[in-house]
Image (tube, rainbow, N blue to C red; front, side, top):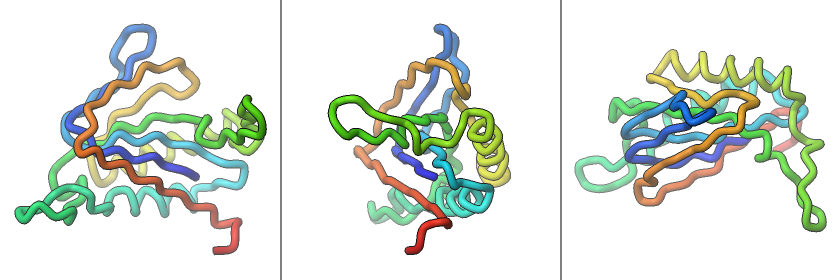
Length: 149
């Protein structure tokens, strides 16, 4: 499972010119699932994401989480995070199939929603994502329990 986490001042996602998710200060997160991913990876990364300290404290140091600042998450499913480029065209054979990935995305949203408010993109839709990156701060998180660390 892979997450591309961006600290934002605001972010939104549109489908068919209609806004389906919008947040102010918080994290816009692209979410991708690989072939071996299960709820175990989703649980691990949900906890990690909520606790990730990338917001400034009183001294300007990255020491506060999205929960600490009463921020929100905008979770956007993106299978292309598992694109593998050999020549000039990506292959997505390492991405989890859409049916299972959709279920896992819904599970991940549910787990994150237990801790902070969550908005989402629409699984399988063509989405237009807009954001005002704050910093910029971009962090990559990934976990695959089937691989040996």
